[in-house]
Image (cartoon, rainbow, N blue to C red; front, side, top):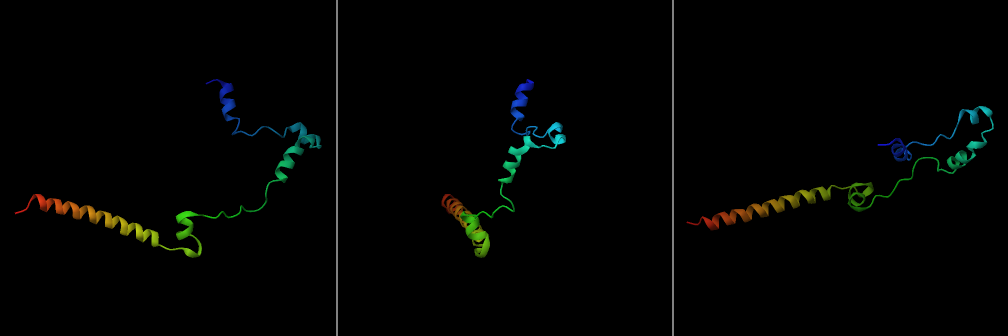
Length: 98
C-alpha cells in the first residue's frame, strides 16, 4: 500500500492537529475559537435513557419484569420435541406391527 492511501484511510480515525505550539505559546488562542465553539454546543451531563421496546422492554425491563417469555420458550421447545418424538414412535410401531 502506498503511504497516501494509508493516510487517507486513517484520516477519519486520527483527529487533525488543531493546537500547535505557536498558537498556544502566543496566548491569543484565536485559532482555537472554532474548536471552543464546537465543544461548547455539545450537550453536558449524562446521556438520556433510551426507551427499550420490543420483547426486552415489554417483559424484562422496568415494572413489567417477568420470566414469562423464558417459560414460554422452554414449554415451546418441549412441545416441539415431544411432538417429533411421538411422531417417530408412531412410525416405528406402524412399520413393526406384529
